[in-house]
Amino acid sequence: MKILILAILLAAFCLCSCNKSDNLKSIDGCPIDTVISNNYLNDAKEIVYQRILSGDYVMDSNQVLFNQQEVDRVLSAIQSVYALHSAQSDSIFNIDKIHTFKLYVLNSIELQVNINTPEIKNMVNGQPTGNTAFDGLLAKYGFTYNSRYPPVQNLPFLNITSNTWYNMQALLPMFKQFSFILGAQGDGSVGDGNKIIYQINGATRTLNFNIGLGDCPAGCTGSYSRQFTIDQNCKATFIKSAYIP
Image (cartoon, rainbow, N blue to C red; front, top):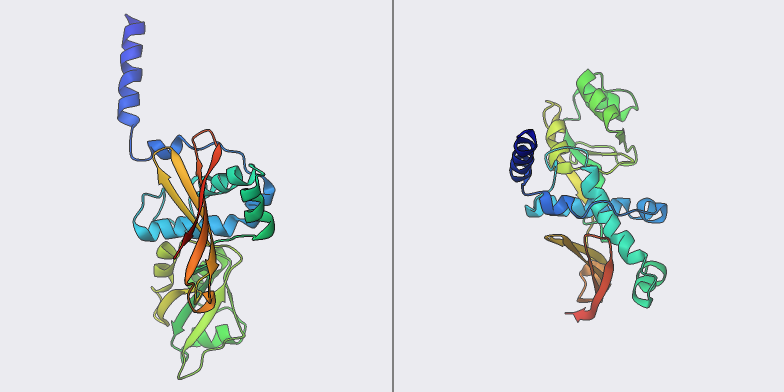
């Protein structure tokens, strides 16, 4: 009787625990080399951030720090392609050295400020602002004032940077709550370039490594793409190469 009850409870638990992230969890566990984790960490964060902006399901999408499982999931897909050591993958990593175009620069913030306030005057002079909460926010996330671009009366903006990339959707509102901060926005890049396009379909992930063609600083006129799929066992398969106008 106890065995029957235990079996029923286990079945009920399995049914109740199913949710939208089940397919995502089923593709975890791929090992990641330091070569990939060191060189593609910001690419992975950029990809996760773009997924958040597009409305895809992303764990902890309302948190400042990116969910490590989400970041590792992207890194492990890149790792799986890298581990093929095929003509296509070697070209991607060793010849073309494709990284995703950093449309969003997630360690840099532009603050619109009231330059007449003592807090901003202190900051421009290389001192703590004197506002404990604001100085604590800067310290918590490792941001420092970029003195190369001081604010002026007709251009009251200053730049702060960190060594870590963050989810700006969650971080920027924290800076906007201070009276001497009139606005806050994340930095970005102008133009276009190479891309790593990442998609999830159930337990299968798809990676497109695109080389931008044409005058990419002004906007690429096309791209050359190599597409791979990665299954739940971390096995990558080359699918096709294609020119995309």
